[in-house]
Amino acid sequence: MSTPRSDVAKPFDISKWVVWEAYRQVKANRGAAGVDEESIAEFEGDLKGNLYKLWNRMSSGTYFPPPVLAVQIPKAGGNGVRVLGVPTVSDRIAQTVVRLYLEPEVEPMFHPDSYGYRPGRSALDAVEACRRRCWNRDWVIDLDIRAFFDSLDHELVLKAVSAHTQQRWILLYLRRWLTAPLQRQDGTLVQRDRGTPQGSAISPLLANLFLHYAFDSWLATQFPAVSFERYADDAVVHCVSKAQAEHVLGAIEDRMAQVGLEVHPGKTRIVYCKDDTRRGRHEHERFTFLGYTFRPRLAKSKRGNFFVSFLPAVSDDAKKAIGKQIRRWRINLRSDKTITDFARFINPVVQGWINYYGRFYKSRLYPVLRRINAYLLRWATRKYKRLRGHLLRAVRWLQNVARREPALFAHWRLGVRP
Image 1 (cartoon, rainbow, N blue to C red):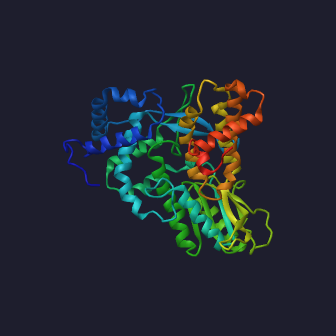
Image 2: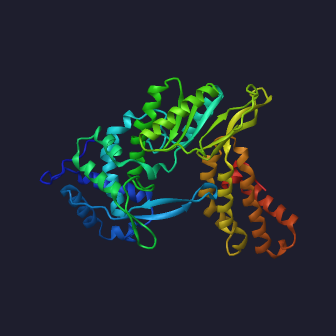
Image 3: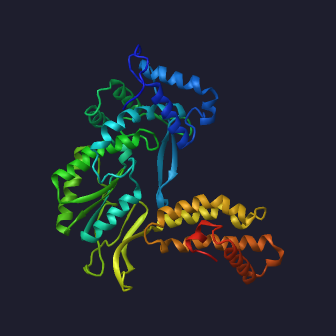
C-alpha cells in the first residue's frame, strides 16, 4: 500500500493517513457501540485527540483491545441464536487499520470462486455462478461447517497471516484480538482460546484467508475438475455424479477435521439437481444458498415453451423475515401518517429486498410484497371516515392512487400494485 511517510521514531511505522481512512470506513458502516457504550458521534466529540491516541498506541505497541460485547441475534428461520461480537468504535478503527494493510497483500491470491467480503464481488455473483453450474452438473454438496467463526484455530490463523506479511505489529495485534474476551450482557467475561467474533472488522478477512488454505486451494488441488462457490463459511460444491459427490464430501470432512473444523452432519447434504432432462429421484432435491432456495421450478423458453428447470428463488426463511419486518412497521395503525410518508419511510428497505431477492425468479417475491398493499388498505379504512367499513371503496381508492402515482412505492414500480 502506498501511504505517506509516518513518524518512524515509533517502534512500528503506521501511517496516520491509514488511521484516518479506517475511521472514515467505520463511520460509513455505522454500527452499534461496544462495551464502553461510546457511539461514533461521541467518539467524534474529540476526533483529532481520539485518533491520535489510537495511532500513538498502535505505533508504540501498547494498544490492547477491550473486551468485545456479545450480542445475541436470532438465526434465520428462528432456529436458535447467533452470537455477534461488537467491538468498541476505537477498536473497530484499529482493526480496520490492520485490514487496510493486510488486505492488499492477500486479496490478489484468493480463489475466483470465493465471493464473501471481497472488493468487486457480491452474494448475487455467487448465486449466479451457482445457478449456471447447477444446469451443467447433476449433483451438489450443500456444505455447512459447524460453528465456523467460533472454532477457528488461532495458531493456524496466525500461521496463514505470517505467510503474507513481515509486519510484526499486524501479528501482535491479531493475536490480541483473537484472545480478547467476550463480555456478556450481564458483564461477565468469557475467555477465548479459539474462534474470531462475527461482527468484528477483521474477522471476514481472517476467515477468507483461513478458508483459502483450508478449503479453496486444497479443493482446487485435490479435485481440479470440481467447481464450487464459497461466501465466507457458506459453500456449494458441484459434482457430476452421486458417487463423486460422496467421495468429495468424505474428503472434505477429513480435511476440515485436520484444520480443527467439523462438517455439520445434520445440515450438510448431497442434492440432486432435478429438472426436465434429469428425472431421477433422490432424498434431497433442493438446497438454500445465500437466501435463495434452488429447486425444480417452472420456466419459460425464449420461444414461449414451458419446461422445468433447476432455479433459485427467494427462500421461505427470507420471506418470513420480510413479512416480519412489514408487520413491525404497523402501517395499519399509523393514521397520523400520509401515504407519501409511508413511501418515503419504507421504500429504501423494500428496494433493497427487490434488488437482492428480485434478481432471480422475482415472481416468488410478489406475494410477500402484496402484504404492504393489504396494510395500506387497512390504514386507509382507519384514516378516512368515508372508507370505514367499505373495503371495495378502499380498494378502488388505493388503485386510483397507484394509477396517478405508479412510482410512489418501490414495489409498485416492480408491478405489485393494488
